[in-house]
Every structure is written in C-alpha cells, then in structure tokens.
Amino acid sequence: MTPAGGAVPTRDGALPRSLLFAAAAVSALAVVAVFAFLLWFSLPVFRGDALASLLSWRWQPLRGQFGILPMLLGSFCLASSALLLAFPLALGVCCFAHGAGPVRAARPLLAAVRFMTSVPTVVYGLVSVFLLVPLIRDAFYGSGFSWLAAALTLSVLVLPTIVLLVDAQFRQVQAEIGPSAAALGFSPVQQLLRLTLPLSRRGLAAALALGFGRAVGDTLIPLMLAGNAARVPHSLLDPLRTLTSHIALVVATDSQDLAYASLFASGLILFVVTAFVHLLLRRWRGQAA
Amino acid sequence: MIMRNSVMSRCLTLVLSAGLYAFSPLAGAADLASFAGQNGKIDIAGGTAHIPVMNAAAKRIMQSNPSIRITVAAGGSGVGVQKVGEGLVDIGNTGRALTDAEVAKYGLKSFAFAIDGVAAVVNPKNPVAGLTAVQVQEIFAGKITNWKAVGGRDAAIHVFTRDEASGTREVFWEKLLKKGVIADSANVVASNGAMKSALAGDADAIGYVSIGHIDDTLKAPALDGVLPTQDNARSGTYPVVRKLYMNTKGEPQGLTAAFINYILGDEGKRMTAAAGYLPL
Image (cartoon, rainbow over all chains, first blue to last red; front, side, top):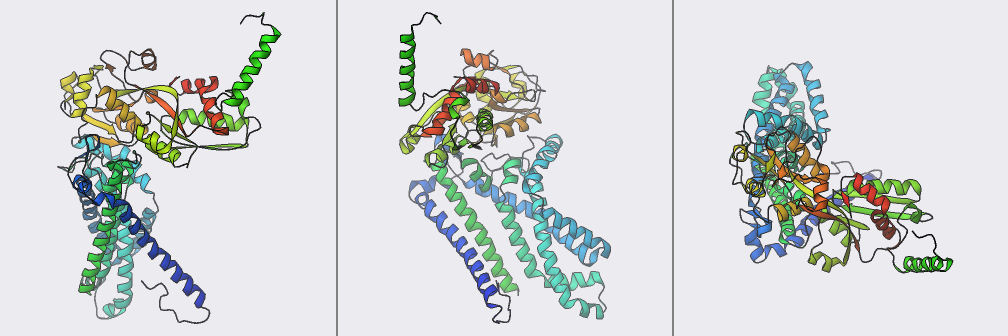
C-alpha cells in the first residue's frame, strides 16, 4: 500500500501526508490489536483438554461436546461454493463489459452491479427466505434451509465485489495497451482474450482473495438461510453451520463455559484462515508477476 | 372493607405502610404515580419474550413522565445476564431462572413477573392434531422422521430448534424432551420470530415457541391430550411452563425499583396478560 501515492513532497503536502500516514497506522494497528485480543482470549482454550474437545466433530454442548470442526468445514464449503459460482459469473460480466458485448450495454450493466454493492445483506437474506427457500423445498426435498440456498444467495452478494475489482483491473490494463493493440489491428474481443485477460492475472487473484474473504466472513446469509445444523453436510440440500453464524448463535450463552470459549477459537480460526488465503495469493501473485 | 374502622387504626395503617414504603425499596405504589417528579434513565436488555411487556410499560411511563427515558433491547436470556452483570444495563431479562454460577459471579437478584408456556408447534396445514410427549421426544431426537408414523401424511419431518442461549429451548428441552437429545440435523433459528416464519412456510416442519407467540400462522397440537393454552398452563394441566424474570445487580434502587414495582403491580399485570402471558 502506498497511501501517499508518490505525491511530490511539498510544504503543502506535508499535512495530508501525515494525516494519511496516521490513518494507515491506525488501521494497521487495529488489525494487530484484533489479532492480539483474539489470541489472548482464546489462549486458555488452546491449553490442555479444551483443545481436543474443540477440535472434534460433534457439537452437543449440553452433553459436553464442543467440536467446532463441522463449522470450519461448513465455512469452507459455503465460501468456496459461492465463489465457484460468483467468480466465473463476475469474469463473464467484466468480459461482456470490456469488449465481448455491445459497448452501449457496458455502462448500464456496470451501474447495475455497482448498485448491487449497496444492497444490505439482510435484504438478500430476507428475500431468499421467502422466495428461494420455498422454491428449493418444493423442487427437491428437505426444509429448504440448506447449503444450496446460502451458496446461491452468497454468490449474489460477493459477485459485485469481484466485478468491481476485475473491472478496475481491466480498465487499467486497457488504458495501457488499448491504443497500441488497436493500432496493431486487434479487434476488441481479440484484445480482451489475448491481452487484457492474461495481463490481469494479479487483479484476478486479488479479486478472488477478496471475494473469498467476503464470502467466508458473511454472517447474516448463512445464519438466515443455511439451517445452522452443526454437522457436516452430506449434500447441497443439507443444512450447515459456518463459523460466523456459530459465533452469532452462541454469543448469547452463559459466558462461563466452554461453549463461549469456542467462540474465540472460531474467531481466531476465521482470522487466521483469511490471513492465510491472502498471504498465499500475494505469494502467488508475486511469482506470477 | 369494614366501614367502621376507627380513625386511630386508619392512622396506624398509614404510618405502618409509610414505614414499609420507606424501608423497602420495592414497596412503592405500583402505578404511574410512583414515577411523578422522578427523572433519569432505565436501560433494559435480554429475553425476547419479555419485550412486548417491557415496551408497553416503557411507553406508558414515558408518556406520563417525559423526563424518564427507558430503552428496551433484545439479545436473549444469556445477553440479559451478561449485560446486567457487567453493569451495562439496569435490568437484564431472562426467560429462565439464573444458574448458581451466574448468581455467584454477579450478585444478581431475580424478580419473576409472569408464567409462559412453551409448546411444540407445526404448520396449520399439518393434519396431526395431537402428539404424545414420547412422540415429540422421538421426533426431536431424530428417531421418528416421517409424519406418517404419528398419524400425518407421508412426508419427511423438518425439525427446527433454537440456539443454546434460548430460554425457550431450555424449558422445552428440560420439561418436554426430559433433557433428551436434539438431533444435530435439526435446523437452528435464532428467535421466536424466526421460528414462526420458518414454520409458517413449511407444511412439514415442527418446532417450538412460547405460547404467547402462537397465532393463526401456527398450530399447536395437543400434548398428551392437553391443548397448550395459557389457561391450561395456569391451572397446571399443561406442564411445559417457565417463569419470566427481571434481574438486577444487587437490590434495585430508585427508578429501577419503581419500574420493577410497576411491572409487578396491577397495571403491569394487565399489560403482562395483554401480551399473552400469565401475570404472577
């Protein structure tokens, strides 16, 4: 990150510069503080018998079983399936808007996607509860509150995030190579497929990472739609519980027992997983560049 | 009352009751007059079943005395205990009795003001009119999985339950499921309201809500032949009941004491009954 953006250091620029530096420092410190806080509170959990209890596959707190592995798997299943749907779609939208489709359709399409980012999560959740869930229930079997319902809705939620990032990347690449490519006789579609896409690998990786972060971190959609049964789903129509909705459901319990401690472990795992994915993608981007 | 009371004994009664009023923080007049001339703020949080009563009381008190502010937040019984224990609110509501650990940790004091029943409920389209307690236990344990086994149509049963922080779940699990297993394949919803909307749309679902929440979007089958109604809960024929509590950290003082008194008094009892609960 370069908050000061390579501005020429003049006397006028000194104040904004230091303000930006302060803002960046505060944000960075907040992240470190969150991590330290989570670590501190989950430390008792990671000592002794509690850890073995948490890292198991059964969540039956009334019988003394506090396994959070089903939730970890649930988070991973849901986020990756939503991404599997949303990423190709988002890529398609961007390709359509940058050469594959008619020029006139590009602006309204991107405007619509930008509007989607401003729709609150709870609206998607609510609409799905009343429209999508009954549809799934009638079309297949089960109660409708399922992995499938949550994955479909979550993909709608992460789609605009990915589109905006990929779109920004495409714009940047096309601004650099557009004129030369046109001069060399590339058609818009050729330019898109032969030049823009291959040159956008970094941006695509970043969009994938952010999309995953958004999908794995969302609470309301799995809470409202995924059914929240704390066990490993056997099919797309089974309910599942994510780490985030687990935290939301259990946070109100008696703060003295291991169920509550499992929340800090869940939070820590979420934090570490997202950080790990980001690092992995950064590394991959570094090699690709 | 006997009309021949001597002036003397009337005076005595007055003095005695004045003494009581003065020495017990909870013996104030239990109507709106006790808030006259007071000002300040009461923060309330916790159990979701309490909210209709709390809101009705808060509205009347604030209308009669605009210099009193009362806020009512949800969160569930667990949140009620935590918030009042940490001193973040004045009254923390719970739909269950406090555990010994909670009382010991925070020094809380409980005031029960209502009785509420919890009933197994199904969609109104479900033809099943009655279940035995054992059938309900086996359905929730995942042993009975088709409505045909309990006299319904041939369809899989969709079981809905509440999160572990729910007071409604606790009473249902303790008194109806007899602390039996709830299958981990059951869907979990986070409030009485979410339970209602999940069941209202699903003809094959079963769940449970507090009796105060039952309306024509739900059907409550008879349990062992007894209809889960507030009347049956009051008389004791319907066994799955709980009390609703207000909790304070230590002995309540000032406005908080006046509020609790108001809820426990005649007007509070009327509002409790209007919300569908049985006043104590």
